[in-house]
Length: 200
Image (cartoon, rainbow, N blue to C red; front, top):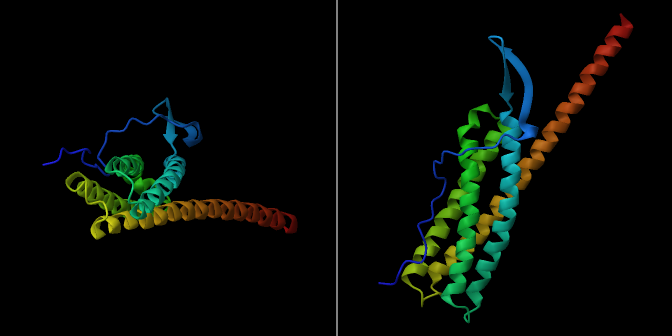
């Protein structure tokens, strides 16, 4: 039996992550029992994590497209396939670590952020499943790189990676639009208050 060349891909491990507080996620200081306490801004933290995921999905999408192109390059060795699958796996696991934290704070997030976490996690799990299946095939069939089943996994990895990137992009765009609408609504409210005062 051929020696296993990959460790099992672990998607969304329940890690005890130690997160460094980000300055942009800070909220005003409040006083509790005579002591200063700084409330944590989960929405800002989620935005930062989603932006990191967006960056990672860009890298994943590029590597997945390269991996899919290997279907037509019969001169490539199994080691080349293994290297590219390793890069893909690493991106997925990095995304999974951030999704772990987002899942943990999901109840504290805005509606669009919760939707983003749900959809991104679902697509990421699909990418992870196909990547794991491709890794297993390569471990067991190093000389059969052009199996239709293996080729289908490579195509699915590329397709789902594209969907993952599009999801991250669109949800962050939705968040920016939502913030702009809130800002405009606040300006409109203040204007209406001034108008009401001037007419009284």
